[in-house]
Image (cartoon, rainbow, N blue to C red; front, top):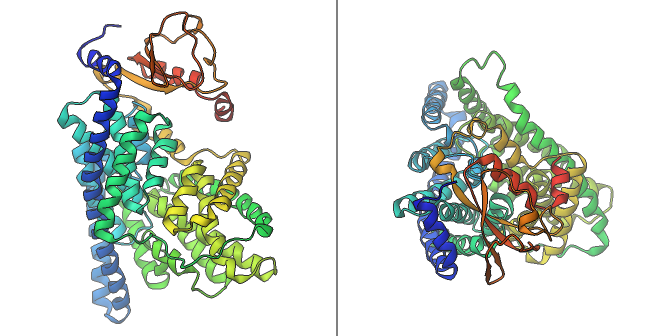
Length: 528
């Protein structure tokens, strides 16, 4: 395999590692500042359009038939706009998180400028008009393509670009939810799946800068407001286990619903992609009259749950309505994520279970808010299979730092429950279904790249010498880093758990085979 210009530059970067990491530090600051500014604008417009939508639905019942017909005509025209821009840039459709994962894996290309403006317009129109979609998926993709654009403008290396895309995604979640630690953890645990310092540094700086920008615009207030949550007593911890097991099953059902809604939209009545979007928006228009709480992302609904009457029928109606409308909204394919609606569904699930616990005299009513908060973390972990991110995210979004222990327990129990039900991580499942992922139409000059992987304890290469490992074809080991030391990849060198290895490859299949060799065997067994 011939090594040419960009790859020589990459190897030179590996040979000047401290300087390369310092450059990533400053680039993370730039990525976070730009991404945070764009996403803060996105949030501000969404808040304005949400207020505008709520005002319209308050007025429509008394506005006369003409005004109501005009409103539904607006929804149909908006559906045509969303259809047009989705056809123009299909990679901007949906959440955007699977697309970012695909880019980091080297399996998908993103046209950053087109995705940026399509995602902004599509997210504002779709979420603003009431589709049950969240801003976090678009924000993560917006942050990622902003970082990609900066990388292209500066002429950065492919390896470096993937680090910056991870940093941009981290900034996206941090700015969307005012949660810097969750942004970093999501980027590392779910997107990059590599906790090396070279990934952490730009991701952390980008998340911090994006959060600073967000707090300048919106203030330091947390996204969810539950007041002073009482400390959850340890003698009720068995209820958390029960709650988390149920959430594990519920999260798995939610994932199956997201993956299966495509079958619903394959019915003959949806003879054209436009009809899917029009159906979703018109459904939202009808719900605006009878169940407006389920429209939009749903963070305000969560904020009012603790103030609602303790009625299973009310919470159950909101749960079913939010679940079904989220599936309808996401399945139509417009730009928008399900991250925030997923948390709302988890909160409503916790509300229903909490009321049952209260009516059975298993727990005092004062702990209902705790049950709701804990249920959100458990539902997230069951769906995404990222328990650390779920724990930190809910802790930051609710400012419930004293609940770290119970949130950790709930997330881990829910994850185990979901895996016992043979559930798959939702973003991985969505990634594998992307047509772009299946085509793998990456140009040859972009396939050739150096990838960084961590040798995990107990993996197929742990403890083996470089010469005894059957490396896939089209793959060359070019560098090994062990702590602060750089080791030449001699045939006699033995790899150890914790080593970072850098491989030159020009074949996607070879890169994936190497990944399978160096990740944990336990994870391989689970995937199989």
